[in-house]
Length: 237
Image (cartoon, rainbow, N blue to C red):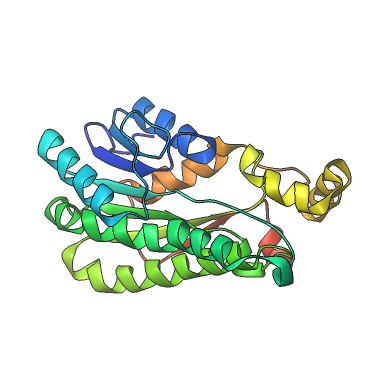
């Protein structure tokens, strides 16, 4: 199926590893021009820094002449018991995962209005069902859902579609803090997999396909939605 992404300009935050890296590869395979905002690239950008983000988005728009899609994917995860979770850790998670998503979305808005483009946010099933030891992370990802739905309502008259994916257990190093918190990685993996109706973790590419579909100009009547990519886990909660 032709997703209609050939020649489109896509901005991907957190595109250096995990789901973000798989997304960059898939977009390039579809013929899109991809610009990565990440702290680990040659021109590092911290999405929680408004000045850095504004400069990067302006540079992209000036060089490419347009922005058709924003994939707001940057995120960090720390896990631990709430009573010993520091406020500095909490603030940093909110700053990157939620504040950063707002900053990047706001910076891209004028360009997406011109192209009638799309935003796709990466939330999490932690926002939908909760997860022990992840209070700060779950709060940030629940905030993403609220941000996305508000933007979807606001931008629909402009032809800009705004949606989110909520990945479940994806086989990437991103989840390592959760396994460290559990202190028994193999046993925890087995227990979690046993709860998933599909009885396995997902590969990053399986999340990426949903993201591509939500950004595709073929899905012109879909906005304000959260697509859970979790093997059916959230259905059972």
